[in-house]
Image (cartoon, rainbow, N blue to C red):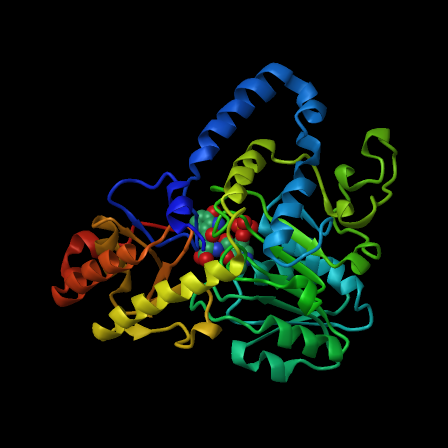
Length: 395
Ligand SMILES: Cc1ncc(COP(=O)(O)O)c(C=O)c1O
Ligand SMILES: Nc1c(O)cccc1C(=O)C[C@H](N)C(=O)O
């Protein structure tokens, strides 16, 4: 039996706030403050440059990668951490295209996050080999896969609607047609069980500032299937992905396996904060997190239904990630009204209110408080208040 009170207590949540935006930025783990302070004071402050060896900074990307691997069904030595998700996606897509050299189509869906689409467009343009990016509605992906598809590049959970792609089925279908897969797990990692080994996915990327609670700007991760790793010639062959970085050779030689996907200096302070966040997952199975996430989201949906609100997320919990989205023409003002009452979700144009559920710290009481305020907002048309309707926030 998982002690979710203990995991909640591991976060420094502000008093009086119901936090339903962990799908965008997770909250502060209590241990992060002391850990980062100690790193600054004792490791950086006292050891100075010696910290790279003595404090294990250089090994952080692989060490942290192994811990994330446990949460996404990957083997040790298959995940590295550092840089941003946009950069990791670039690396993964470039590597995937190398594995399908005779094909020219990258297939993705319109539910993908814009940065993924922009990065793909930019990469294909730079390659200048006649590749195209084909963007279809999420429900048409399976039928559009063909023997022309080089790479199937998808975000497993749609950032707007929470719609969940069937990774196992689509990966199998892609492989049957000779295509390579790149999965973006930004809205999956730490939110639901992912089985990279079982699905045989080729490449995967994700961020650590959402459900993994690594903090604003926390570094991203990249997974490469072990048999693929040795084949990859990295798009960004940085010195820390070199077989012998401290030999300072004039030409690049790839390090073995996933290490070749390292680029430059690891973000040591951010990785230390992330490590404290990953500690919180130590005693929790992803299946328990998933079960509780469904309980919380079903409770929220029942309340939203009772208010007559329009659900934009799949009604079947098996087809949704750990967020619920509601469409309303006054969604922006409604969300501002909720935030002013201490219920923090977010808004995505043109009309989506998003509510993320993170079982490590969200409770049934959070859902009930959020619904009570939502009911007040709806029944009293609080969006008519100009204080809420003038667009200011960007996140
Ligand atoms: C699915 C997805 N991909 C990519 C990104 C971009 O990540 P980053 O800004 O860390 O590069 C985000 C979030 O911003 C995202 O949700
Ligand atoms: N990465 C973000 C940031 O640096 C600032 C504000 C928001 C974000 C986000 O993560 C947005 C997020 N990917 C989304 O699902 O909309």
